Image (cartoon, rainbow over all chains, first blue to last red; front, top):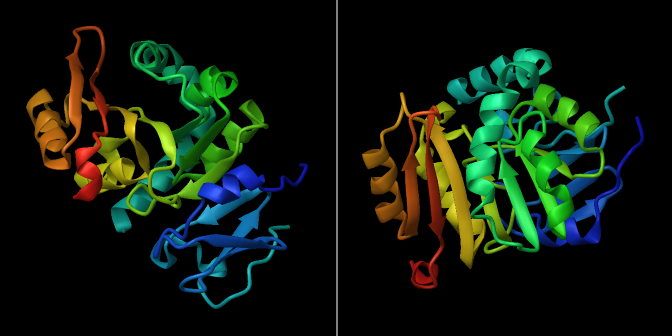
Length: 68
Length: 183
């Protein structure tokens, strides 16, 4: 499955689901410029969920990894 | 939260047969709502499921984005619309800045949410003033009157609330007004 990158146009409108501040793209993660929450991009799909709904392995504090 | 995870699990499991089962009835709702969709630049489909609506609208706008709480649904959608950005997200915590979209669709989704009004507040937040809110919910869960209460509560302009014999949903066509920007 090809990896997708996030277009600039999309990145411009994305925001942290928790604090709504801008996100920056760093490798395979989106990182909140406000609260520093990290959101993984897995198989091209950003997981932009609040911590309580995030799958265990991607919870806050843990570095996001690509799913194998 | 438990309810949300339950909904995600249910749709993860049904994603394979969802389209075959619901394509016809969903398409009828899309036709009604699409007649009111602006030729806007940016459009969101909240609860995009397997991407049936995304497939219909992706060529009509500058940017179309699909979000869903079910990864199973999104994986199916990716095969259907590989060129549309898809995001795993929750309706109560939309991962977008304020006033981003010219139109937000959410078809047959609200009935699954623990707090539909909270999700609609998020929908209004991410819709541009003058932008369209095009949503539906199952009649057996929410009445036309209830939908009208939401519209009032949110300060939206009601363009139309449709309840048709041949459709299982109440359909809302509304516009975000300039005034509710300051609320």
